[in-house]
Length: 188
Image (cartoon, rainbow, N blue to C red):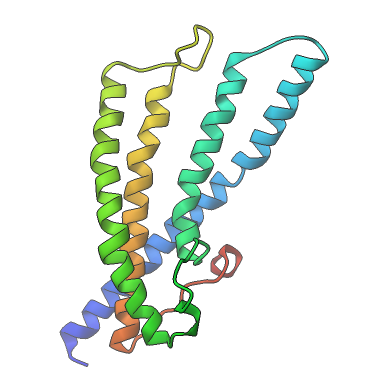
């Protein structure tokens, strides 16, 4: 292997590890949204059915937490191959065969869709920021613009993790396998 090729492998490996670390750091933080959401729903049920009270902001916060949990968990799910695969033959393929599928899938399926989501989600979020968009409810959360910002953030994170997936596959095809962790705990 030439000096330039070794440098490219090192830079690629560093990028993959950095993106993987970022995805794990985000999911390790975002996972706390699930119990917070459950506690908020429990509190809402108790206050509504025991005390007859209703609160718009906590109700809307559940929607925000739910959306953020899914959007922020997606890159880590991709990292650990936790996403749904339609290809029933993938598991039967060799390591190089799986690398080809991952490289093509990341390049021609994931990246174009993530770019479109980033483009249109970004303009959607930008409009929300211009108008400082808030809840339609008078007593609701006045931060819809922040929630809409999570759409292009999700797309950017998916592009980063998709790039890492494609590079990991290319490294495998080049003879420098770098297996993805099967779980977040394995990566931590």
